Length: 311
Image (cartoon, rainbow, N blue to C red):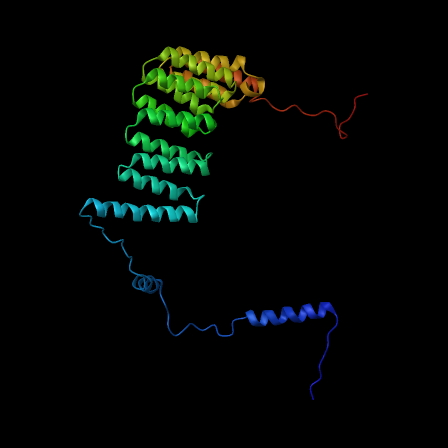
């Protein structure tokens, strides 16, 4: 006759539960399966069982009435997608691109303006809108649009890049320079200043480019800015004297925690080596070794409990 055993102790219950779970997880039969399936067979069956991709039917339009009917159907499709997911920017962009492909530029602009009412602070949307105008050579409209975008989102760098790129491509150098100056007022990162200097360099305005790099180094007084200034002067401006002056200024004008870095001395000495000034490089290395106490033995600590005192 069976007897029901009741275990009231919680530790005993946990022990029995652990043993039962281990028995369930243990594999009883470790022999290989009679039918082995290779990875090649799995891939082949997956390829065979794939559903055939259904292409959209090709619409043949014979007259203007059918063309207008096709446009109405496609617009209804896009409007339904927007109504379903109004915040999804891709639906708006596809709708505007459809209108652009059909040379309906006013409708495309209307779609983008409606999208901006939904996501006015989306920089990608402003960029797509500006690219629409630029692709179709509406320069003034693109300029006005990018001006609106950078006023609303002045911290988004790629809008500024697109703005100055467009002005340089159309050949309006004073306007491009004015846009750069507006951008510099927002204290952008290092790459923006380098782009400004390279823009002046492409126009062979090296004096203005040097002044821009000096402004950049003064506005961001750090070893990084001085090193980039010196590298630009050496490789792009081809002004060795200016590069040497920048390296020397980095050792004098910067704060001690910025100037007393090994990489500053290393780049300065490497620059002198490239110019064939080996004696200058040797002096820089000696100064750095003295400053960082290189090659000196550490002083022994005389204050200890094990030493003897002389009487």
